[in-house]
View 1 (cartoon, rainbow over the protein chains, first blue to last red):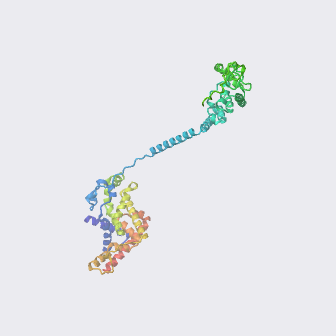
View 2 (cartoon, one colour):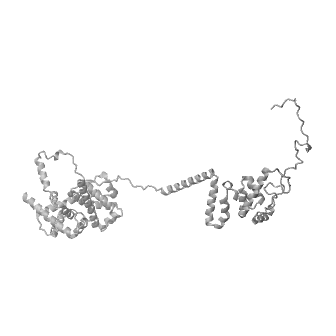
Length: 287
Length: 183
């Protein structure tokens, strides 16, 4: 204690010497009292936050007024939360993709024109990266009727007779035949030719009675001779027919029987006897 | 004078040693508490603990060993005092009614004697100085800081701190001698 007092006295004297003042007892006593204010012990124990810094190794002798019960820290340890942002983002992305796919499939199922439009869009995108592929596939798609979206998918190596026949018979439109010819590699004139041929075929079947059947040539298509090629058809169609020579349709085509075979009721020279007329007094058959 | 700690204690505290925090608190807490008490803070002990909370949470940025830590600690304490002065300036002082402090009653002889003793205390003497002079004397005497450290805390040059200290001591000397003459 005496050493501390003497040390404080030395500090106070040194302070007064630096200031160039004389040492007087009242001033020195006042400075000593002021200095003693900085050595008073803390009256309260450290707060729990401070004890968290000091931990259980805090020396109780450092805080003379500290209560023994205040040494354990009541602050709970900090546990970092688990981060689930990555999992959440992946789940959200998956849900968005699934919802988009469901919506697109629903629209495709509801509207038949959506498939053609989607196919056109896909072919345009493919054509952007591969122009040679697009020049071969994009043309029929752009001219295609939405109802005939399956037409470009038909085999291109069929006979011209079958193609022109299946077009109007299957879909009832004259444009389908032209598309088939065009898809087979023909030019614009070939498409128009196919449309004319199919139109004539359908008109004949509706308005004119069936002519005398020709078993060898009686095809069910629009052309009179299924194996022949129209004069207006392009060279491409001829080449296709020549290439597919082994795949000609069979000539065995069911035909109508001759007129002399079928009975013609009501004609006296038909050789078929009519049924006897019922007697007039006979009772009328009950309906 | 507060005991000086080796610089290794500061290094250990920066690495998270709990015992080092305890030694720093034991060495500097009385000085900080006395500084804030003489400055007139109502809850000086609570303010001192807030100072050490700030110091301990930023101890990784302290440089200069234990003396650097001492300077930083009293810088925080000085900032707390300034904050308290500004808060009191903004808010009106509200105090409850205490019958013992009602001046309309006649004090007893013992109370009058105690008040006279408090009036002659060092706190009343310091209140007669200018705020800057009070600050210099407190940091030099109570906190036991050097002129350079006080200059760093107050944001002044060392020469101006030396002049402030001289004027404060001259003013305190005249006050003490006048009170001695009255007694």
